Length: 332
Image (tube, rainbow, N blue to C red):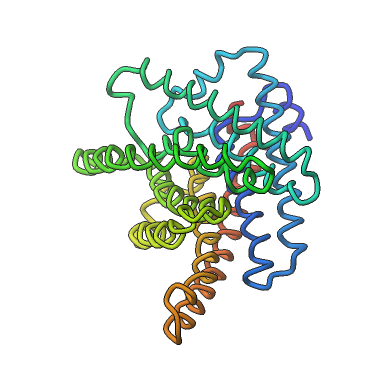
């Protein structure tokens, strides 16, 4: 309680918003698992309830501090590894809207609209920080996917809440920016690795490469348009390919033990699990025959494994965040 009271006086450390985004995303994955994997529905609903309340409380604390001193957002975005943190809050608000849509559509719509609007504010602030920084502090790291591609989550709740056109526009803009940013990020990564390696604080962020294609699959299915449906399986395959490339380097990515940067492991893994469920549902029809059935069954088992991994990883990262917050090791 003393740690919470102190956090309330200061505000929530924004560096932990990616972890909260991962908590909400994992909850939505577990909800989908009730339909696809046969999980007990209460698991996902309980997880979503706790995760949503945690993100809303943390967001309220931070936004209250921001209202008192708006310039703080620019300060929080100054360190290159932290430039995706604030966008994780706005993305999380849109996902909380998706979580609340079945039971509280009015509140869910307000959360979705608020999250979408806030996302553009944070994207603009991030762009300002990038343009104002000296050249050596402008690395095009995967953290920038969150402010500039994070609107890719919009259809997950927006389509069901009646914001289909807005969701399609946001989704299309995210795909375009993703295509433009990815070559720049790969060039940065090649240069960093060739120039002496990557700092441990930046390594977990490489997991974010998995998130855009995985979310492109999930949001494409949620949007339900023929053109977005056509992207589901290719986007999932791309996310799976990226994850397979990163998997042998997991120890290197996590070297040094828990840090706030580990939040970057949570939402990409949850997104990949959700996208794999879509693959399990669609592969039998896409391939047909016995081969399609076998592929679908294989994807089902992979989805179950990834869902378990996402749940365990997110709990581990969230526990580390809670301990760091309690011990005062994070500034808010």
